[in-house]
Every structure is written in structure tokens, then in C-alpha cells.
Length: 112
Image 1 (cartoon, rainbow, N blue to C red):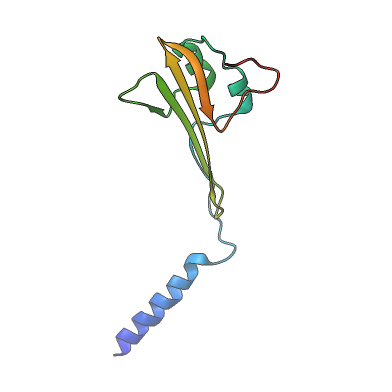
Image 2 (tube, rainbow, N blue to C red):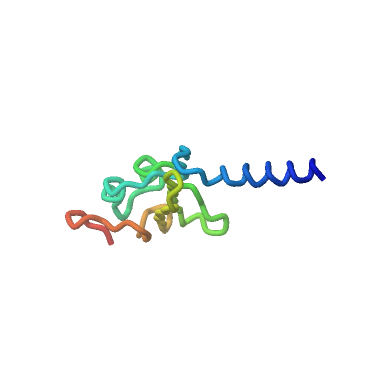
């Protein structure tokens, strides 16, 4: 009985440490960093290699539709909530035609 009581107390004490205030939690970035400057460089008619030069290798290339590239960036700061940014690029015959997602071109750039 004594061992059982000690083990229950130990489990209770240790479980209380999981949310101990002041414990450092690392920032967790994942995926492709996407900036507005990168999006502003995208122009209709760019080739896939030009887009890769500007944006980097896409995180996801659709297996069934190679004409769509997805760039996803997720960031979780310490114990805060997770933020996610997404950008999808669409190609026709190997040329960039449009994009959609969390970013829009700046007012001083022309994109279809």
C-alpha cells in the first residue's frame, strides 16, 4: 500500500510540471518561408525554373496534377498558437498563370 501511495504522489507531482510557467519552449518553423517580396516577383508567364529560383522548391507538388505547386509555412512560437501561411501556384504548359492563397500582389505589381 505504501508503494502504491508513493507512486500516486510521484505521478501527481510530475504531471504538475508539464505546464510549469517559465519553462522555455522552442519556436517551431516548418515549410517554405513566404515573403511579400517573393510574391511580388512572380509574373504570369514565368517558367517553372524561374519560379523555383524566386520561391524555392515547393513543399507539395500534386501527384495527379503537376501544374499546381503549394508552398506552406507553419510557425508555432513557444507555447502560443500555430500560424500557417499558404500559397498555391498554377501553371499551364509549364508557364505560371495565376496564384492564390494568403498573399496578394502589391499595388505596384501586375499579376493576372
